[in-house]
Amino acid sequence: MRKNYNPWLLPPCLRKIRFYCKMIIIPITVFQLIRTLFVPTTGDFLLLAVLIGLCVAFYKDFI
Image 1 (cartoon, rainbow, N blue to C red):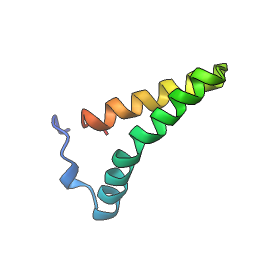
Image 2 (spheres, rainbow, N blue to C red):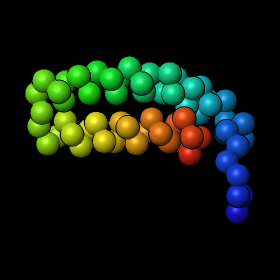
Image 3 (cartoon, rainbow, N blue to C red):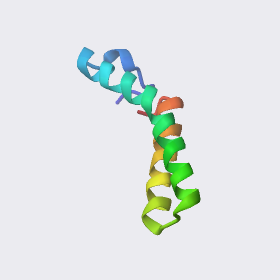
Image 4 (cartoon, rainbow, N blue to C red):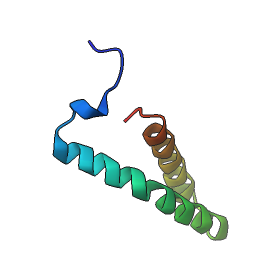
């Protein structure tokens, strides 16, 4: 089992998907944050928590 994550070992199509997801995750999270501030529901808070978790995972290279 590998100890370090290396994104260059992924197939090219998955690297592109990862790249584009990393580019759009911040604007989606900001939009969800603004939406949660105006119309706070339980679903909005859960979605915001998932999006923040994905942001951290993408920028810390966990995914």
